[in-house]
Image 1 (tube, helix red, strand yellow):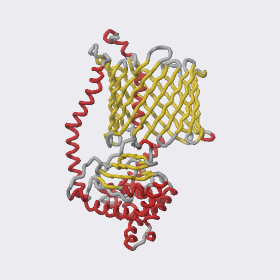
Image 2: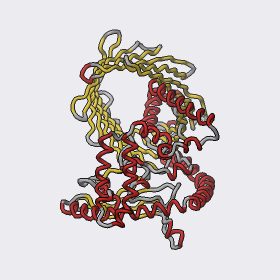
Image 3: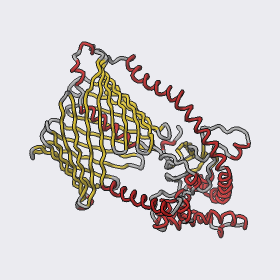
Image 4: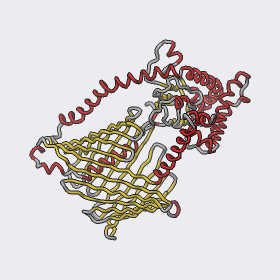
Amino acid sequence: MNHKHKDQNQFIHDAAAEQDNQQQQSSKRRQKRHIDNDYDDTTSVETEVDLYAVLNIPRDADEEDIKNAYKKLVITYHPDKQTSEEMKIQSQENFSLITLARDILLDDKLRAIYNEFGLRGVTDSQSIVKKYDNVENLLDAMDRIEKEKSEEKILKDFKATGQQSISLAYMHSYRYFWFKSLSASQSFSLNSKYGAFEVNPHITRKNNDATLGISARYRVPVFQNKTFIYDFEYNENTIPINRVTFHSPLAANTQGTISMTTVKHYPVMFGGSIKRVFSPQVEGIASVVITRVQKSITLDITRTVEKRILNLNLQLGTVTGGQATISREIPIGKNTGFEFGFSAYTGFNRVENGLGSVFTTIGTRVNKVLDLSFTMKYTPTRYLYIIGIHHRFQTLEIPIPIYTDISLLNSLVFFTLPSVTLSLFKLLVINPIVKLKENKRIQERKEKFASACLEARRKAEIDIKLMKSTVDKKVLQEKAKNGLVIQEALYGKLNDKAVSGADNLEFPPYINVTVPLQYLVDDSKLMLHSNKKSDLLGFWDPRIGEEKQLKVTYFFQNKLHIVVVNDNDQLMIPLRSHLIQ
C-alpha cells in the first residue's frame, strides 16, 4: 500500500501508549546499564592501598568473611610458615599488611574512618588535618560530611524523580514537521515505619487536549514475610482503578505475586507471577493476566554475564496473538553502552505476522549524575529517533517519529546517516583531542609514579615467590579432578603492543598474573570482587591512571575457556559463557 495517499491523521494512530512503552524500555535499559565510576585523578587515590582487595572480599563483607579470608592468607604469608630466614623477612611486610587489613575492617569505627578517608586517615590522623589549611577548614569539612550523611539518609527514605517527553514528528510526504505531544510525570516516594508510599502525578498534552492523571501505591510488610501492595490509578478521562497485590517468597530463590484489579468495586482483572533466580547470572519471570476480554501469559528471561545482558520476552494473548522480543546489551567503553534488539508478532484470528520493530541504542555517561542516550527504532509504519537526557533526578526524552515510505533505501539512510555522522565527528574531532590530552597525562603520571611502580613490582615478585609452593600443590589437585587450572592471566593495557626499550622493561603495558590467580582458586572456583585488582596480592599496576583489563585463559574439565573483564569488574569463573567452542 502506498502511504502517500493516506490522510495525515491515519499516520498519527500510534499515540501515548506506544510512546510510554518505548520510554519504559529506555528507562529499564538505563537502570540495567552498568558504567564504571568516574576516575578521580588524585595522588592519594592512585597510591592508596585497597584493603578489601588485599583480602579479596566485597566491600560489604561481614565479620565471618573477613576472618575466613585472613586465615587463608596467613597459611602462606605468616613468617613462621617460611623455611628460610630470607623468606621470613620477605613475608613479614605482607603479613603485616594482611593483619592490618583484618584489624581495621573488623573494627566498626576504624572501618568507617577507612571508608571515608582511606588508610592514611587510620594510620596517621595528622594526614586528615594536613589536607586542610587550618583547623577551621577541617571543622568545616567535617561539618559538610555530617550534612552529606544527613542528606543521604533523607534521600534514602525520600526520593523525588521525574520524566518529561516532548514528541516532535515529521511526515516526509507532506514535508511537514509538527509538535505531536508532551508528557510529564513526577514520582515521590517515602519510606516509613508504617510502610512505603509512592505518588506519581502525570499530565499528557496531545492534539491541543491535556489529560491529568495520578497514581499512588502503598506497600507494607505483613505476616510471614509477605507484602501487601495497594495501587490506585486515576485519569480524568477514565474510571478510577484499584489494585490489590500480595507478594510472598515461595521457595529458595523463588517469589510469587497474586493481584486483583477492580473498577467500581467489581473485579475486572486477575493476575499472578512467579519470579525465580536460577543462578547468579539467570533469572526469569512468568506472569498470567485474565480479563473478560483476553487471557494472556508472559515469560521474561534475563541473563547477565559481566555487564553483558541478554533478554528474551515472550507474550501470548487470546486476542492480541503472540509477540517475541530479544534484546542484547554490551559495554563498548568505560562510560558507554550499546543495546540492540528486535521483535516479531503473529496473530491467531488473522494472517498478520511479521517483524514488529528493530531498535538500537547507544548511551554514554557524561558525569556521575548525567547520562545521554540516542535510540533509533524501525516499525512497519514509521521510523523513530529518541534523544534522551537522563539526570539523576530528572529525565528528558525527545521522541521524533518520521512517517514516510518504508523501503530498504530509507531504512539504510535512517540507520546509517546519524551513525556515520556521529562516528566521523568522534573519529576526526573528539578522539584526536582526547588522545593528545591522555598521552600528555600518562607521561606525567609515569614520571610521577616511577618509584612507586618499581616498589610495587618488587613486592609483587616477593608475593609470587611466597605463593609458588602453594600454587604448585593447587595445580596438581585441580588437574587430578579436571578442575580449574589457570593457563595464563594477563593484567594491564591488553590492547597495547609491547615494544623494546628500557621504558617498557620497567613499565610494560601488561603483566603476567597467572600464579596469583591460581593461588586464589578454591575448590575449582575463583571469585574476584569489584575492587582495584592492582592491590591483589601478587599484582602491581604497571600503568597507573590508565584503563586496564584482566584476561584469563583457563582449563575447566579439560576444556579451554577465555574471559576478559575491566579493572573494577567482578570476575566469577568457571562459567559456561567463557567456553571456547
